[in-house]
Amino acid sequence: MGKHTRKKYKHLVTDYQYFEIDKRDFNYRTLIIDDEKPVRLIIKELLQSYLNCIEIIEEATNGIEAIELIELLKPDLIFVDIQMPVKDGFGVLQCLTKVPLVVFCTAFDEYTLQAFETNSIDYLVKPVKVDRLQKTIAKLQGIR
Image (cartoon, rainbow, N blue to C red; front, side, top):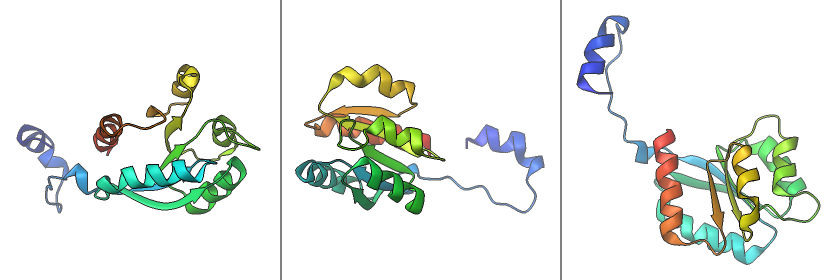
């Protein structure tokens, strides 16, 4: 909140102090969803550089497991593959009562338009590149 904004709304706040919030200190409770273990490990490894804003709480190996874990753990963010056995990434989102922030992470770029129609915040193509993941993290920091 800027100096001028504080002055403008100061009359609305009586017992509160103004705090400048460092967005890097927000943790997104995160679930990684992919049917391939090596891919999950790579995503986890890449996210280790962002522990100041990403907390990996669990992994799911298929769509059904993902739905159960999302409903149980209520993550803030999911990294989800699109093509998985049993239920794909889009099917997972359709089954949720509350959809967390979504980053699709897939080997196929043909689903880009459909992914953004689901209000995902980003779409990463495997193999995930560090500089591209940095842009995703910057988007996340801008949200909170």
